[in-house]
Image (tube, rainbow over all chains, first blue to last red; front, side):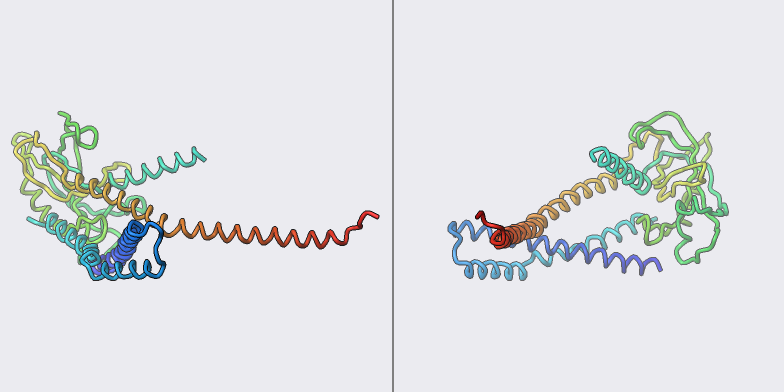
Length: 91
Length: 227
């Protein structure tokens, strides 16, 4: 049935999108942390300290609101489908 | 190479433009002259341009399709420039169902009733705006699919294509977002990899030339020395 097909393929497509955006967002955060460390330690600093600093920042990121906002990737298209469905069939 | 690239770009532009022109909603100012049901025996040429049977029904080789006949105000440039001329247009009235194109239209029969209610003659015209997608082609016998009918006061109504405005704004945003993602991916993942490969390559090259040096030096020892 059409609805089941839409749900399955929609879920697969949106999951791919979700994973890609998640990787992108983490990559941006890591780069920011690296740049911050570079600003604090112009000479490069200790390698282990640097790794620890970045790991701590990434853990903080994971527990923050941003990764949860990426879940909107699933919510927004579902709402869009609902809106179109209502707009088309409303009498 | 430059010419091939240009041709590919033009081809992509035509294909994507054609797809969007087929799928995106357009608005016609029209006067409905009648509705009818006609059995369609699809060929492989025009099957693609008709939808699936109504949601909940079984697919068969042919079926009855609802149509709406109308007199429309002709336009230039995708409806941006109005003309005084009028022309005939026939719309099919079919469910799009859940998949494609994503209009999620299930109210075909209701729309048929609405069209019947708004049918009028040229003496006493009732003007409507018909939202539709698709193409009319007389040689393939294909019709645009009517999505919605809205009564309006007169033929000079201004229609603002809100959906298309939002759609293109969203596509522009999505393009820049995808581009930013790709640039980030290249900067962080591909470029370091390429640097690694280059370094390894250099090191191997050095070792090879070093080895070659040793071997050729050893070979040289066998060469006859000037006596």
